[in-house]
Image (cartoon, rainbow, N blue to C red; front, top):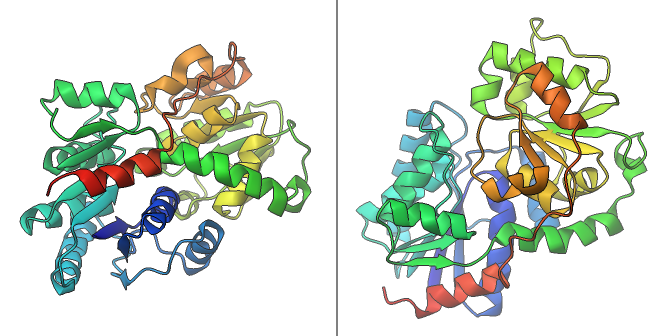
Amino acid sequence: MRVCSIVGARPQFIKAAVVSQALAQAGIEEILVHTGQHYDIQLDRIFFEELDLPVPHVHLGVGSGTHALQTGQMMIRLEAALLELQPPPDWVLVYGDTNSTLAGALVAAKLKLPLAHVEAGLRSFNRHMPEEINRVVTDHLSQLLFAPTQTAVENLRREGITQGVHLTGDVMLEAVRTYAIVAQRKWSLGQLIPYASGTYYLATVHRAENTDNPVRLKGIFEGLGRLDGPVVLPLHPRTRARLDGSIQIPANVKLHEPVGYLAMLLLIQNARAVLTDSGGVQKEAFWLGVPCVTLREETEWVETLEGGWNQLAGTDPDRIAAAARARPLGHPVSLDIESASTHIVRLLQETPR
């Protein structure tokens, strides 16, 4: 059996690492294709080494660009790469909601290759988000849909998708459980930042809806400036490119170079609270028992809102500051089923193509 896994953004590397290990343990051949959607030679190397991911068999080298240009280039190069695979893969496996996901889904459908989607059924119900379009299209093209939560299953049912849907649990939870321990062994907090555990806030900002809108980006930084402690902000390349003279960086916001996955997990574990527009970071904070403020008006991970562990604040400075002061109730509830990656691999093996 052959599975072609398509990745292109760093959150996908994390998900693919867990599934790749399960594929290898099952004796399944995997062809890993990297679209190059997010490509930073240093960060990519760190992620692949930390996660013990195999070197990609194919690197498409697409890089950045408009949504149309990026997705189109991916499709052209990906089609050529898949046609060269002989025998053809039994499954094309895509992850999440990026342009790499969409390109992989469209090319697989056009080539009549069976398609499986990890993280199927997530919905923010905001069609202005490019990621939402990618999710919906990919789900409607897939033969196997691996839903991480019951909410995701229900979202698919409401859209008329019931065949091939499986509640598998979340591969990112597997990654957090595995690599949080590794992170504690590899790093001490003092090697990363000059702050003690529980004395700083951690922030990440990368979504185009925030970084490409000067008003929203200014609101976020004003909100961070109202927090009663230092804010560690590892800068996403998109965000760094938008920080011109019109955005004032508050004195308590400490800009940091991008960090690898293990360092990020350690920073989350020790933060007083996390402020982010990232879906993955919302979940990681939730699972690690750290309060989260989401710098968006909606989240596809609605389960994280229970008990106030994740609060939607948008980009209004007052709402951001108030949400960061709030304390959640009780303990976050695990969203886990049992070993999502093993479940996914078994379904790939057992499902007729």
